[in-house]
Image (cartoon, rainbow, N blue to C red; front, side, top):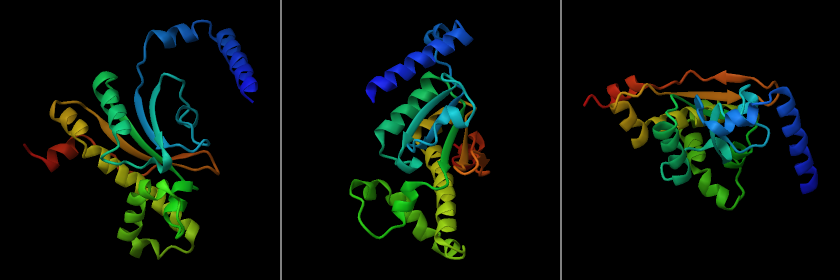
Length: 205
């Protein structure tokens, strides 16, 4: 399988160079992405592919169920690098329907370490229990919970000291919440965008 992977890489590299001779030279010279994407590790949701972007146009962090933990040093390091070093001004938290992590968070049997990781989603399920129980079936409830997880993620990113400091220094950064549909390949805006005005209204000082 590794040999097959390497062969595919050689073919892809040759095709790219044939189509655009300076492609790799240009990518190697500078990393200047416009977006920082926080998404799910699911193999069916590669950020640049579903967003129609080329490599180099999006800086990516992924984890199971796109959960934002305030103590996740991996995520925070990537976020700080995106904001302070790459000067990214559009941050996207993207979940997807049919998420295995959301499904696991709604099940009653143990999943090992994943249960600790997914605790924020279970907390959301408890907080929004009244809304979720109004939906007709478990799949619809999980879809809505995936959306709520994205909205909560946008809020959590906005509350990090990294974003608060950047906004305090005048950076025009916006955080968006999107959800991806595996069945149709479409991204949907959850209308929960947060910008510098959120910081100003939350902390007038």
